[in-house]
Image (cartoon, rainbow, N blue to C red; front, side, top):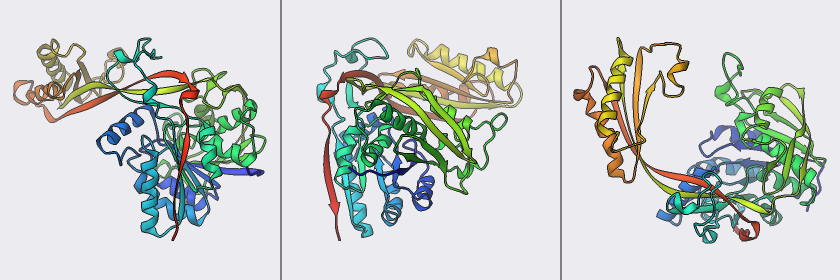
Length: 444
């Protein structure tokens, strides 16, 4: 393992559909050692499993090709190693695709695929889902089971010298912790130092959120130049302290407020933030504004990593049918309400859980919070769950029939049918998730 004094890691994506441009800016101007693209969520990987089932050569991130085509020349020119979970349900196919792109561009590259998160063979259906308290088999037909691997699964890939490491399901902070362990020679058993690395990884993992995206409220928390929002990078030191900043000239801002919001993002218990690497205590973290768009991070402590790994299980949850229609002008709300009542009377027996939303009035919050506000235009949305696609389609058809069978002035009907993939979580012994590395390379 190497031993450096400082490592600079950038985060170029915080989810599968994130913008590509900020990653390019980081790769071109960020003076990075590592670029991380965090592109995988619970439902994302279940959907990727569906694509892989339809075609064994697919199942990786839908934007992988576009991202790699644009990033590869910059990564190579600036000697940046890329770590990403864009492998989703098929890291090996993702590595093959990256090699194909490298061949077309005439760029020599070594790619490592990290596998082992797919633990479907170990799921029998009797496992108790954390969300429901019931056996997994009661949720629906299981289509996928992916364990959250940790930094230890990535370390062997780093040791191969691969310039691009593509994984499946790996805990988000672990994507950042792994290169820190590799570069600083940290011990996996040193819970405090792994916890400090996890803090930095957690602050970076959502990319644009710590630079003001999602944080912004134009009235209470304005953020400048969000159209060109930059993504963050961190200078991390061997003692686990870090400074988080962004490339000069990019939009957004990094302040104590943006950092605090991100620190607590998706954290239910700040005393015990559990990852496959450590149980981290965020209550001892210190944040300090070091300069414009620069936050110093220090502190944080940890306890031994858990013996079990969290597993996201995807299952077939039926279909949703939706229909939308707009009413505008005088008495818009009254006409939309009449239309909603008509649909409920016609479909409530067939779709017991049918939902009626008045977008612009009560689609997000209840009417008790509207202060009597009467919108000039209302978008009526009807949605319900069904066992089959044909049944789900009835909902949109009924909404469409409102054109001439409902109140006056309805327009702009849209109708949809979508298959629903449900997600529940279980815990399994970590010994059942055995990671491995498959190396691919292209030389010219």
